[in-house]
Amino acid sequence: DAGVIQSPRHEVTEMGQEVTLRCKPISGHNSLFWYRQTMMRGLELLIYFNNNVPIDDSGMPEDRFSAKMPNASFSTLKIQPSEPRDSAVYFCASRPTGSQPQHFGDGTRLSIL
Amino acid sequence: DQQVKQNSPSLSVQEGRISILNCDYTNSMFDYFLWYKKYPAEGPTFLISISSIKDKNEDGRFTVFLNKSAKHLSLHIVPSQPGDSAVYFCAASATGTASKLTFGTGTRLQVTL
Image 1: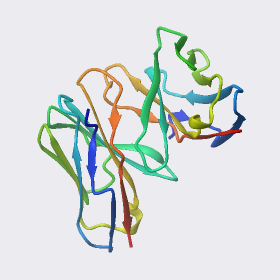
Image 2: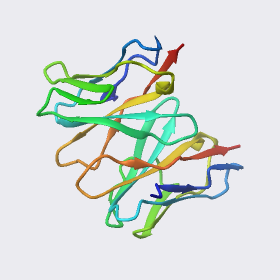
Image 3: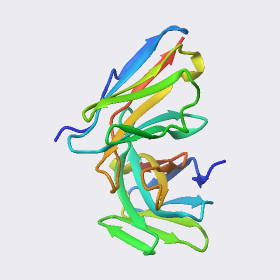
Image 4: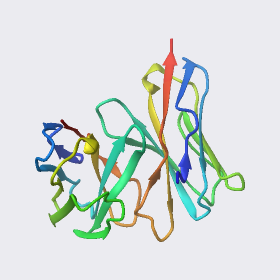
C-alpha cells in the first residue's frame, strides 16, 4: 500500500525564489491537509481540501502561500516569494472523508537561505 | 493560543517500565483525541484514539485515558521498549470540524536499556 507521497524530501533555495511542494494522497482518500512544523509552533494546519475543494485556509500565514488541488491525486503548496522564516518541515496528510485518522507523508524539509 | 498542550518536552524511561505521556486541552468542544508517534525524518503515524464518550481505550501495550472534567488525557505504554523512543503528539478535533486536528507540541520519549 503506497502511503502519502511528498516531493521533494529536501529543498534548499535562496530567499525570493519560488518554492513548490508536491503531494500525492492515498488513493481513495477524499481529504487532504497541509501542515507546517516548526520548533516554536509545532505542527500547524495550513489548509485542507475535501474532494479537491479548499475548505479552510485560515492557517495559511500570508498571501505568499497558495495551495491547489487540481485533481484527487495531486496537490501543491507554493511559496512565492520565499523568505528565511518559511524554513520548516511541511507535511501533507490525507484521509477518507468523515473519518480519522489522517495519514501523513514523510514531509519536505525546506531551508530558505 | 495553544489549545492542546503537552507540558513535558521530554521523558526518559527504563526499558520494561511504564511510560506516561500527558496532554491537556482547553477547548471544551473537542470530542475526539488521537496520539501520533513520530520518528526522525518520517511523518507522524497514528497510534491510538479515543472518543469523548469513553474514558479509556486500549490497544496492546498502549492505553489512552481521558478525563473530560479535567480536560486531560494520557497515554500509557506498558512495558516500554527501546523502539518506542520517538516524539509523541497529542491531537484533538471537534464534531463539525472533524477534519481539523489541533496538535500539541510533542513529547520526546527516550526508552533506555
